[in-house]
Amino acid sequence: MEKTQNLKTRNQNLLPRPPIVVVMGHVDHGKTALLDFIRKTNVVAKEAGGITQSIGAYEIAHHSADSNQVKRITFIDTPGHEAFSKMRARGAKIADLGILVIAADEGVKPQTKEAIKILKESQTPFVVAINKIDKPNADVEKIKKELMEADVLLEASGGNISWQAISAKTGEGINELLDLILLAAELEQLVYNPEASAKGVIIESKMDKRRGLTAIAVVRDGTLKINDEITTASAAGKIKILENFLGERVNELSPSSPALIIGFENLPQIGEEFFSGKIDLAEIQIPQEQEQKLTVPVIPEKLEEPMEQKINLILKADVSGSLEALAGIIKTFPNGKIIDESVGDINDGDVKLSQNTNSIIVGFKTKVSKAAESLAKAQGVKIITSEIIYELLKSLEEEFKKFEEPAIKGQLEILAVFGKKEGKQIVGGRVIGGFFTGNSKVQIQRQEQAIGEGKIINLQCKKQDVKEVGEGSECGLLLDSGTAINVGDQLIY
Image (cartoon, rainbow, N blue to C red; front, side, top):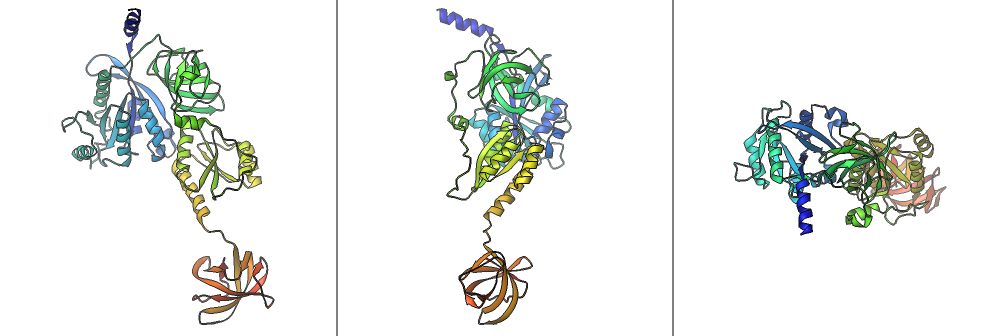
């Protein structure tokens, strides 16, 4: 009887909370433009390359059409680039509802299909926004057909998924879209207990030079207060500073508010649940994948020669989400090996680790300290950085291409051609790099362009047969090749 009464009392304390909404879809279909119009702020201009590259949470107030009330909605803006699929998936998991944005002039694309898959697997209810209806080649009926083929059945097309045609450029249909979101939220019956200890999800974390460890979170239940103890599976601390999404200091925040939290003693992992108050760590379940991630590898003073040749990489990024995405990309390169990864600017410690492990430092949206820059220049350590993910990937691909090219053992310049007979040629030259051995296959180059191949039949130095000739030595060669060799050509071994 007492338990029933307590449960009844708790239910009476429950209050409705605003929906947390994730915006998903293919790159350039207008996700950020939609949020930009809603918030009346220019988010796009703040992002290098015009692409949102870290999760952000924003709160808006909307005047509902079916009532005179102003209702809050929290949006989670997820990155559009394919490299950030993990972050997009995490965004859907912490959201109550989703908006699937599709451009009316393009249709269902690969990331559209991926977004549909994530929303369905995470069982996140969603509405569809068919964007860019202001375009002259917009075709809403075509989009409906393609969605049906992707197993997304819209209302009035044999299904129950709500949809709205919109233009993020002109604002047409956006108010109606927000009404649909609020209607869907009512059906979900979202509530919270204001007297409960707060809990929610960490959506970003980083090391701020000026402010120290900062975490961005979304509150899902209870009331988060200044001076609360706060705990995740990998971090703990006490809230010293609490800010809302506008950067204003507050004493408390209720669901579904985005929060900036300062007070963690170590950096929490993105995607983790947080709990306020005193929590027994044993009660917090750590996903298996995260347990593995939290294991810190011990880096030896000098890396042992690996059995299989790989390019060693040290990864740095501005925030945890970007770092995870970057690491995910590197793992798709078969010859890449991550030696270390961390959040923050590139420092001299990273350069020293690079020296000891023969690694390339890769930085995304990070700066290189003057000490690190000087040390790297002095020690010949390669650092690749970029503010734009596409450029960083291009630079990395070039490094991997160099790695895949066969190593040159020797380089010889032809100084004289003595004669040729039945495909065999007698030439003289000087080894200008490495060494040459008899019975070796060589590439013939003219003006740095490959023109043919051959095989060394005989190698002589000072008119004596030899097995090997080193750099700086002149020699005579009997070559088997169908390519006529000229003075000035080079043999590459």
